[in-house]
Amino acid sequence: MDERIAKYQDKMEKTLANLDSEFGTIRAGRANPHVLDRITVDYYGAPTPLQQVANISVPEARMIQIQPWEASMVKVIEKAINMSDLGINPTNDGKVIRLVFPELTEERRKELVKDVKKKGEAAKVAVRNIRRDANDMLKKLGKGDVSEDEISELEDKVQKMTDKYIKKVDEAVEVKSKEILTV
Image (cartoon, rainbow, N blue to C red):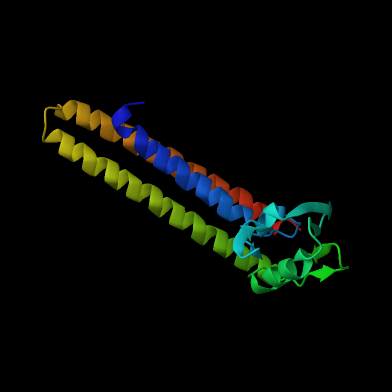
């Protein structure tokens, strides 16, 4: 890989990784502890990720169990979950918080698939913008002492790289959509 276009490949890779992490926060009928990744709690005055103040486990297919390391955190964690956009009411027994995920309705599944496709489309736009930036950089190189043939060859590599990452985005969208639609 030419070092002049390697940084653009890194950017495309980061776009794909970002899409994967976004997909991890979309619940698909099964309990997935990654839906809690964006939840922060007030821990001694500082916003702290939930994973840093509690053990999170999945004892059953549709249940997440959160066991705070300090009993005083139960109410704080429960409040943070209620304020999030999870749409799930936590239950607690004073020591452990449980999130029970209801079975997704067909309508909700279709909404989630639409959301997945929208996020996939945004990732493809980001990849294409990275391609545009790479091609702009190559045009500037063309005004210097780099031959037209070399520029053309690099542009072809950038296009192949773009096609590869667009295909990966499409595959990720397909996998997540199937996961959501599987009852």
